[in-house]
Image 1 (tube, one colour):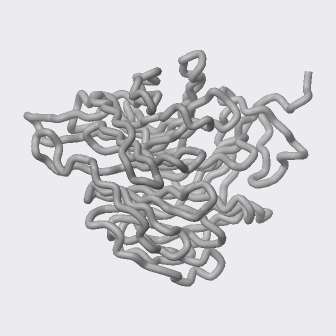
Image 2: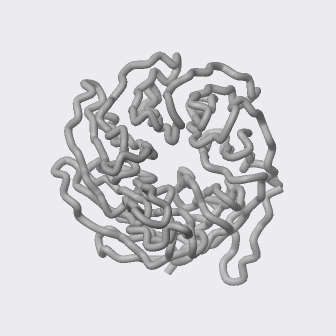
Length: 363
């Protein structure tokens, strides 16, 4: 059962309810954990069925969990287990959950029945991220074979393979392809890897149109562990499609504890120009970044040596607005359609955060 968190100064908005009855402005400084629940292991992937108002998540125990936010007392239900290892990413499309993971498969499952619809051996390596194109006709995936693949989201047919990322780090070690993002108009796709490289492709032609080098996200340790660590863990395009947010961890100073500052960079991807750095002394890797749809605001979440973090930066003022401390490290989040509540998953299971601002229209 989802457990409501005690709140002394601001009322909790019921999950999935009350937007019209309790209209609120989005105020990150008032971010409060309003409900949470625990599940076994760590949840990596999250998707939100906004029509049915249900959350789906999956992670280290290979299973997909569901929370019905419309229920009077929302509870967590273990729905199905179709993967054979960690599940890294989820997407919701027309009543179907699309999932990917360490077993190199992309799987389509009926959200209502849990029935397996389709299963593909999609990459020759861990599939770390998925993204559905606007309109829902296509799906993008990235794997540790260092390939970006575009699929027909309904049939599972492979449309295009994009090959451009390095197969090894500069020192000859294994690398990884962590993140994929799509512009709001669906015309371009971005992919980010361990060594701090982002490639931007034209969707229809498959032509690479831009390349970004963000080397601060990559650390090579030649002494203690002799390994390559860090990497670009999340990408997000701004609502106007002009800016690209890159998230991860800054230069790692202690490889044993994976200690480094949490970091977001904004880039004009068309000119490959770095425009803003959002970095904080909080020692953590940022696993997910997103733009607020109606504000000049970047939201990022993650965790590390300093514990979990949910952070908000004003991109116009170029300053940190607020840092919230979640229950455990966060892996992914989703704003609800009102963009006034945030649902997240990670080491603490499911969490819901309410941005308890002043009611709209109030003096």
